[in-house]
Length: 321
Image (cartoon, rainbow, N blue to C red; front, top):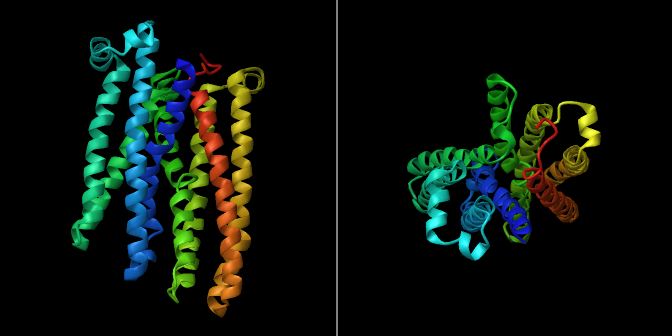
């Protein structure tokens, strides 16, 4: 039971801890068209508040679940004994995991405060400064998960540094794509429901921006993923002969499916959406937006499966061990 709870808490925590980084990066890179008009700015702020509040709440609860599971595992005691204050305090203060979780709790508190202030204050100049601060804190909160997994492994000090840097980058970029698909599709749905005449043009510009962001994110994921795999798997034989390697192959296959769907969105649906923006054909707009929303929903479902595999990989010893 503890093993299943550990996997569940890791899955929930990875998703919720990486999403704030994606939200704030999209606020900087994708959202300017949305913030250009009062009505669309209100849509984006409302989405940001809901996404950040939900993700930070889930991150706090799932982080606590993860700590509890690790405490049970480290102590070797039954759950009712392991989760007593004295044992939890021992793990919290005197283990690498507990000290890491202390630092991440401080980051969580700072991120929650900066995010709330950035979304509440009306002054645009102050909002930008706080948004940048929230982005830095969200990146640190996401990247710090590298110290909770295999990211600190390596055969040499230089190898460990490269591996850790690749793992931090990998975690931060996942917040943009595929997890950034969630705020994107929610913004898409809200724009479709709006009665504003400019909603289709805003949607076309937003989609074009997100497509370009996704291309960069996929390239960074490939580069950091290759480094990560070389450090943890090492050889083709290890990839095919180990449980870790076979799970990694499944993860790569699902990732390829997501990239293929994204390529359709980029090469076909984005182009049709931009063409419809020129001709102001609302019938084409509605059809293309519906298909785009469906494809993104499929990508999000596949991303949930990938994160589940990541949760499992984190508790399996890689072949290099």
